[in-house]
Length: 171
Length: 172
Image (cartoon, rainbow over all chains, first blue to last red; front, top):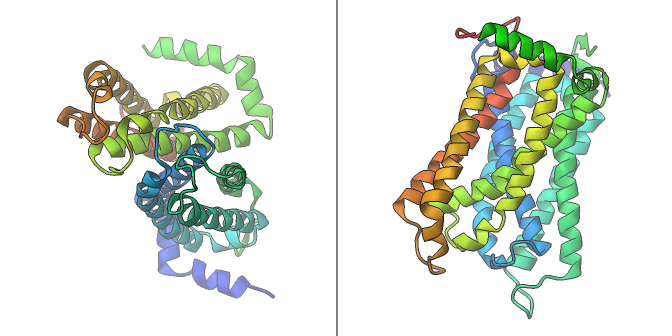
């Protein structure tokens, strides 16, 4: 299926033109800043949670980390909005790049893992209050790897794109 | 000052690290990914501790949350190392870049703030009972810390839009 007409329609929209071409620091550069800040809170909070599950900083009661979740969800919200704006700016660049789908898949799986920790570990402490199952610890390692993969694939989007816009190949 | 900066630039430009960062096709990309992960680690640990000092994330015991700080230092060290490699690769792109200057300014402020925290309030915090609130000074220190790191990330991300020779800073 040829999505070029759709890409062209998005790229010719006034929002897309503003994001890409505006000299304002609040356009493309500002959106990137929000995307980096949201990432820091979402990925950072998750890695801290994973580290606690793995047994570091044992003094932190696992259920008390419930308070991390609003912060992480806020980061996710900021990155969903800024990510959609970046996508409107360069739809062809992202959507024709397999790495972009890898990134989204990793984020989806990592978010499901985050929710699993909240429901199964934080709200359902085992018989011994501060120990967690070996399955949870394995999942914590997988979670760290998925977030690292999501950050890396996001960063690599700048280098792996085949096409920049609907009419421009990426050299 | 200008002569000193130029001789420093020429020296670092001639190092093996500089050649490696400029010529390897993967080094820059790997270092960038590590740099982004390192900053996440710093915000996820030190940033969360700052939020706790400010009075958010309240359910987590303060002294226990402080045990996460070594991981933040680990992230910080990843970023200082990769940051030095970026700088070595293309020193002129950083030395004459106003966004880089502001980033360094806020890193310095964050560093001074860390010193103030450990010298002034950390002793009091260690002596607190589990559910006691930190002293008001700690809230301010937490807020300053968080604002500094947000500014460091902001100006770090904006670096690329203020690169010479397309953009020369007013004070260079």
